[in-house]
Amino acid sequence: MTDLTRRTLTGGLAALAVAPARAADWPTRAITIVHGYPPGGPSDVVARLIADGLSRSLGQSVIVEIRTGASGTTAAAHVARSAPDGYTISVIPSGHPAAAATFAKLPFRAVADFTMITLASTYSYVMSVPSATGIKSVAELVELGRTRAKPLIYGTPGTGSGPHLAIELLALQTRMKVTHIPFRGSAPAVTELIAGRLDFMMDPPATMMEFIRDGRLRALAVSSAAHYFALPDTPTLAEVGIPGFDVTGWQGVVAPAGLPEPIVNRLNGEITRILKQPATIEKLHAFGNEAAPGTPEEFKARIESDIAKWSAVVEQIHFEKI
Image 1 (cartoon, helix red, strand yellow):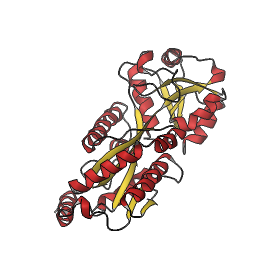
Image 2 (cartoon, one colour):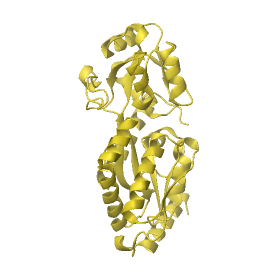
Image 3 (cartoon, one colour):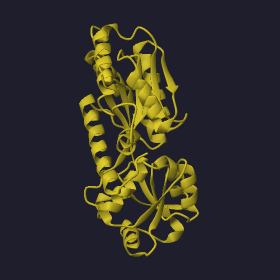
Image 4 (cartoon, helix red, strand yellow):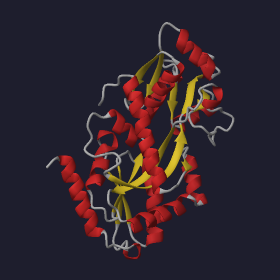
């Protein structure tokens, strides 16, 4: 029996074991929300907002458990192996489909080993340059990247990260020449950008906004198809000559594969209600995110679409898988 067959059989038997569960009977004990990222980061903030809301509405303790390691895949593997009974769920980021495209091997299947509950929040990447460079538009940066003998140097929070793949997609579409410098997180990369040792970056707003506001960085565009709420006058990349460009980061909620539909629907409804509350929206806005709840089917389609998008980029740039 192959590992894949064994996982499928085990997941199926586990699902059968909890299939009789009804939403009215669940939950009867504490729920754990697992994620694989540092305390205080976007995934942690989203997990704790949801945990607080669920504990109030469900009348049970909801605990946030952090399992860091291997770019979040350690936590995802733990959730994939857990019983599909509604007592272990997870907040995953847009790095989940990126990992499916960039890792040579993962200890789980990025779609088949999970039940998708809902997309939770989204954010645009902000394309920025040091203000001292004098570059004032995407068109100027693209032209420089096409004509300068030395490739443009850009930094990211790591190889295979969302910003890394987004910039490589941009380079493919614009024919810019670029060189990637990975850092251990966004903060040191932004420091180098401000100092002028990088030509540009595309990163989440939480790491950029302070320096855009104080004038050290200039925001040229946002990566999403729609304008970003915190930078309403900053154009989208699609508006400035990159047709169809639409990349956003996100956090979403999943559970192990085989979670009974009544529990899926209950969780989706409760989390949607939490995310639509004004207090939650305000807290998400504080670190640059927008609430974006939807259906399980929509979230699954989003993950599958992202995997396809990043797999195509990885193939075109001859990326050496992690």
